[in-house]
Image 1: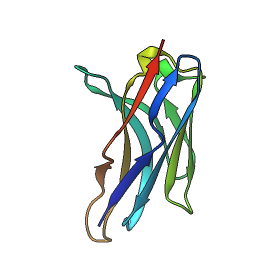
Image 2: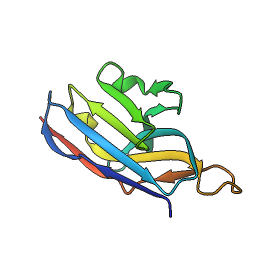
Image 3: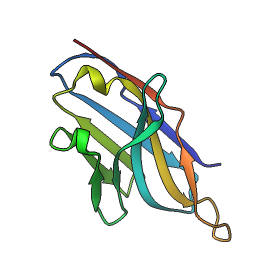
Image 4: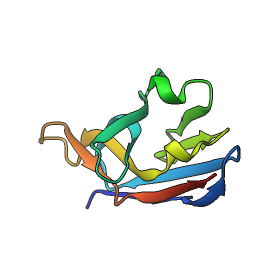
Length: 120
């Protein structure tokens, strides 16, 4: 059974740092992994993605402040968030594009989400 388990959310002051982790299990193979976020009343937006080869992509709003990394041996993706701002407050969701079996097509899988709250 495919699972994405996030950890590391919580309350932090503006200007502070926080690190999110997402451990994937049950996959036959994983391609890209990433983080998305959804603030109250808003759509879910991309934060950062990373391919299995380590190519990264960031939303303009987090460039220079957030860093995505990945440990392929552990099937874990991380999001290091620095210089946090109140507007970074959202539920952060882990995403993985992969296969649960060799014969099924690649699909998107989501974690349950972790709340990040940045106080001013």
